[in-house]
Length: 107
Ligand SMILES: [Ca+2]
Ligand SMILES: [Ca+2]
Image (cartoon, rainbow, N blue to C red; front, side):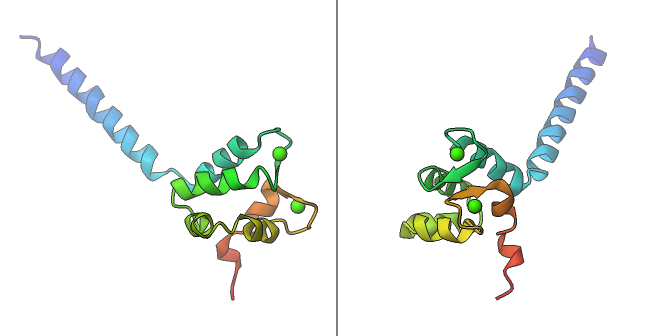
């Protein structure tokens, strides 16, 4: 019998499963949004203009993040964009997106 090898294989399997579980639980929505933001930033200049912004909304909607699915359903990209573009320079920077999180809206 080669039990120790079997046991070791089982242990590795259990540990890797546990690792996957922990990873999924620690997946921060902001990490997903950041990845979506970078994917949507087609020209890679670090901010989203009005043509790039809908890609972020669509990707966020896929992950059921915030009100993205609602914005997508109503096609309210323009309104969401204007709201996210706090300084009104026609582009949404990552920092603007972060200062625009629902948790910061008290009304
Ligand atoms: Ca861009
Ligand atoms: Ca801006």
